[in-house]
Amino acid sequence: MALELHHVTKRHGEGATAVTALDDVSLAIPTGTFAAVMGPSGSGKSTLLHCAAGLDRPDSGSVVLDGRRLDGLDEAALTRLRRERMGFVFQSFNLVPTLTVAQNVTLPLEFAGRRVDARRVRALLTRLGLGERTGHRPGELSGGQQQRVAIARAMLGEPAVVFADEPTGALDTQAAREVLAILRQAAAQDGRTIVMVTHDPVAASYADVVVFFADGHVVDHLPRPDAATVAARMARLSAPAHAGGAR
Ligand code: ADP
Ligand code: MG
Image (cartoon, rainbow, N blue to C red):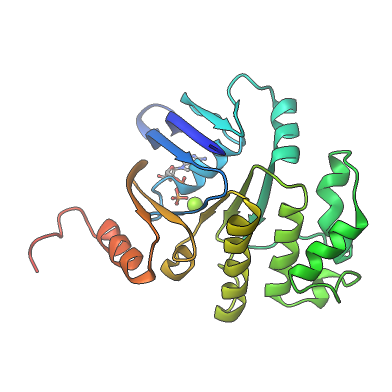
């Protein structure tokens, strides 16, 4: 398993205003799986990503990433583990505007003190359709191209898990499809493990499995999802609790 959560509970805040964002969540994502995480707003998706990446500490339970338990690691060890074994893709790309495409992609490896193989960088960028763009700055690229740079940056170090938070949220339909196809290919062909939070049933349909959250619980798993089934499941989860039955 690339990622395991064992009975993870996480509360935000104190006393009467405390919110249980994750309530006894157990989950296992096998290596080479592209998993989508869906659920209504406030269901715990961001808290899940933060706990899984060691950015937030569970109140109880444990997270195991790439065979290593995160509890017990101090902040320095967690930072190292994030640099060496995790990749991140955000809705807003988070590229450094003053650096070239190639420099953006190699930055995490340089921070980690790892050797950068220029030929591998070029091969990866070429595969993502960015071979002619390696010397460009992010501002000279379309949104879809920028997100492909961010994906190259996340993948170059061959992480155990790539966390993607709404990676297609800022893209048009065509650019989103290209990004999703790249993520799917990274899992299917390169054995990358991807955990993607999304609101979009079409985006989720590119994944191998959809994990549905509601009120801090995992309420369903849908393997080999299609967009219509995902949308129907989401509609039921988002409906008010007492609305069922009447019509
Ligand atoms: P999602 O990403 O699915 O919208 P979150 O994980 O962000 O859900 O939030 C889950 C619950 O925890 C929500 O009720 C939210 O208001 C609460 N929450 C999240 N972060 C904090 C925080 N830092 N302080 C207080 N409450 C929080
Ligand atoms: Mg969120």
